[in-house]
Image (cartoon, rainbow, N blue to C red; front, side):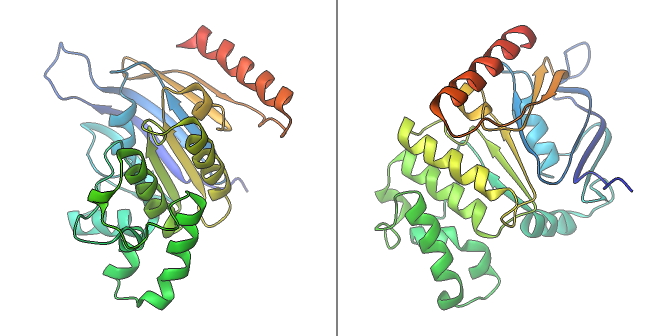
Length: 254
């Protein structure tokens, strides 16, 4: 028996203006299965971020259906949607949305703190994630003491902390230098299968798109191309060849 998709989007449309203005997301259908890392790419204004917010139950479509793990979002109350986001989804946005009164480590472990867990239970994992992102000495600092790129790394650590079923990331490396972006890529790849079932990334960055197993292209709110790629090996030549394949494919379909 074929496993049901983890994320199902069926004929979803979202408008912010009345017709004849084009829809931000226009009759989109797609499925994302467990174990997939998907990159949604497209030009600015193509509907990428809107689609991500719809999948994340942060917005509601004007038409169509979205399900997470077989649970239709349309029938949920706001309280149930909040619980689903907290228990099954992780988010990384372009703005970090950190709590200014909490330390960096506390921001990473926010879900555990809200659940009433003591520091001895959440501290080691928060510290481990911060070390991976070269923030191991900043756990006691406050967000105001960090740069924009450092705050973005904290937001990623917070999203990974609870091992969500689906991690949704909107331009997760947009404010990062090359070395840190590479480290974030490694964390995102390692997240799949390590407690997180699927990762969905919105990006316009080629190197970020290249870490995905599958690329979905949006143009004017519609899916215009959808292709799976075999991830490259670890050799530099294989990585460069893979990036060139992705670049050529995107040039044909964007």
